[in-house]
Image (cartoon, rainbow, N blue to C red; front, side, top):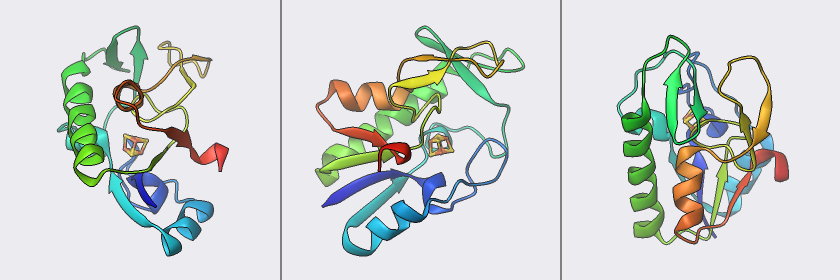
Length: 138
Ligand code: SF4
């Protein structure tokens, strides 16, 4: 299978804190499948490290109050292009991220509360027919 994967799950230090969330199950899958890594937030032009952000309805704001919706949308478009050009069979994204989360995300108050919803990139990929799961579903 061809699988599009959140780069932080592969060990790239692209999280907002400058660290990663390497996942052994994802690495195991990488042995027998073709893995294409992406970090939509970095692709969208955001630096690492960066201020954490959360979705508020259709927009995304950093904790400091900066509207980063454009960067998130740009990253999502790039991810969609990669998924389409590579004709990926599956997407494995990082749970709860405002870009990559699937099914559950933080509620926009930076208080740790979670609500039903998808990250900006996940939403676009789902709309275009891609199957998205998170590392928590592996
Ligand atoms: Fe990981 Fe996605 Fe956040 Fe990048 S945008 S650090 S790939 S969860």
